[in-house]
Image (tube, rainbow, N blue to C red):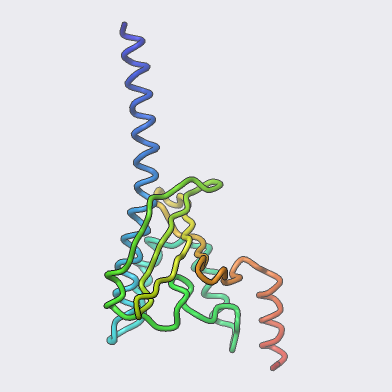
Length: 168
């Protein structure tokens, strides 16, 4: 009888742990976007605090974005990486919807719908994985416009660097 009870408890703990991981990715995404959009949409400052960014975003992703931003007149990231917009308004944050996470490769993917003014919205896919015992964003894709900034395309980055160095 003890074995059956112990097996049941282990099974229950395993199921609860999986459910908490799914909810954790969704919660991390929702927390990030609520705070990020509030800062991005403010008139005072548009710089999201670096320590907060490191809390929510993969170190590799931050490093790639920083390296691309250092290229003069680059055209790889023509809008904000996390919103796929040029500008944002705090009033649009009310339209934010974050759906439940679903498994994707070695992580999770969360559907994010952000307001874009005039009743429009932008649908994003936000990809997360575990890093430093926390869910971290490593990739964002604009589903609405079927577009993704090529931060993982080393060939495109090399071409942009070469063009910037040659003055083209």
